[in-house]
Image (cartoon, helix red, strand yellow):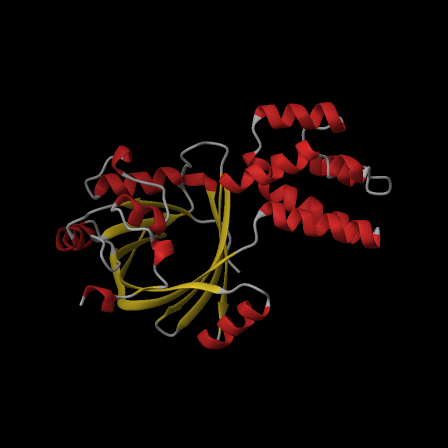
Amino acid sequence: MNYQELEIKILNIDKEQIKKKLLEIGAKFKQSRIQKIYTYDCYSPILMYKLALGDYKITNSKNSLQKIINIISYIKPTFNQEEKEYFKESFGYEEIDKYIEEKIDNTDVSKLEDRKMLKIIEDTGNRFFKWIRLRQDGEKVEITIKYIYSNKANYQIDDVKEIEINADNFEVANKLIEEMGYYRKKLAEKKRDSYSYQGMDIEIDEWPLLEPYIEIEGTNIDKIYELANLLGYSKEQTRVMNTEDVYLEKGIDLSKYEEMTFNIQK
């Protein structure tokens, strides 16, 4: 299982020029292939929160409270100062998950389902995004849970997190995800050329209806931007965004497509 990697994009590149530049700086070519990708929506924070609250009211179990703690722990980086002040005033804690942990034997559930509290949790749906990606990458199959969380209008490189595990079979993995209650919303394809350089991964991606772009992924922010500079791009020319946002910039709403494959360009 792999955890957070940091990633930037550089849009609208000249693919052949970049490939030449990568070889000049000593990057190692790994492989070219077409990837098959399924994506699945995850439940919203407010839905998960209400389900956990309902479960607690029925069972009065610590396990249900732990679910609430986990949900709040995920979304709390998006809480703004006004919301934290409300928590401090109502619960005596700015970090409400800490309140529940300390009061787990005597939690006032009426506070947790207060109208203001529910509105705060609901509003995080505009700042916290979570989805599942299943990807066939040659012989490799990967399941990735991706998160974007930020209390800023435009998220930054360290606002994006992911957890990734390997699977043995694409269709079996899809069946497993669907049996867990997550249903596929989209099939997509992309062409990918992969390179490595000093512990970082460089991907040249081509999606249907988009110009090629680069992804640089690694564990050190400074080294990522240094590599972008070696390729001829300043930090200001890099982007932190998901592919859906890249399509939106071109006026294409991916939510209107069940499939985004190279057949669409024919």
